[in-house]
Image (cartoon, rainbow, N blue to C red; front, side, top):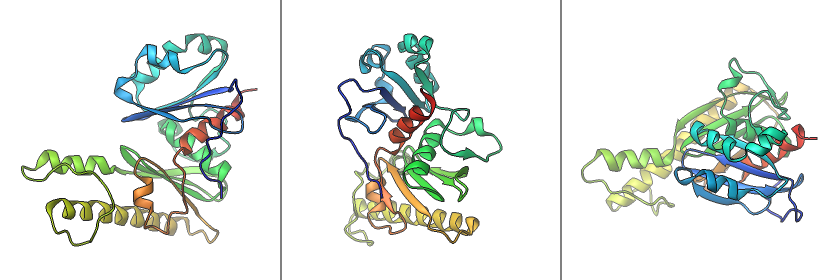
Length: 259
């Protein structure tokens, strides 16, 4: 199966890919075939000047954003590309390489559409993308190759920060693999509850999706996002972790929509 790739594109990469999420923004130059070096910055720190400094002359911009005010800032920073038709903001009306069978397609997040485009092209159908971000999202591609819906659950950070903020004695913890399911300290107990509990959440949601699909063909399950490696490490249900799946989706969407 395809793995995450970051070879260096040509000296003048065709695209600048930008994925704005609630916590962090990833961006990378890309050719039609591959991503270049991926960089990351806190979304809160993005400025007009920061956006403008990302691009090289002549690059086409492909944007995925779940933060409207930052998307508006990007449009302003790349006004010349917008005017020239060299700017794409991902939405359901673009060519994605996958159909959409969903009651309100305009409500699907741009990052989820990019993930759908990537998993359909790189891994095939049927498939599920599990994206471990500020929220954890599950997006489903049917055997026919259509986006048909998904699941949204609280992210790992949201769960651990809630415990820290809402209790007097529980500490803020750094997430890692628990030593034991039986915690021998407050931190150990929190790690066990968080990591093992989260795997249980992911496993149960995947199982329920499988039941509803009732599909006998191989179902590709691909994980991405900040905590994908940690949670997928002990989950055979997840076929592969692809850290830059969303950016790959932006590259694929660029190939489909630009001449």
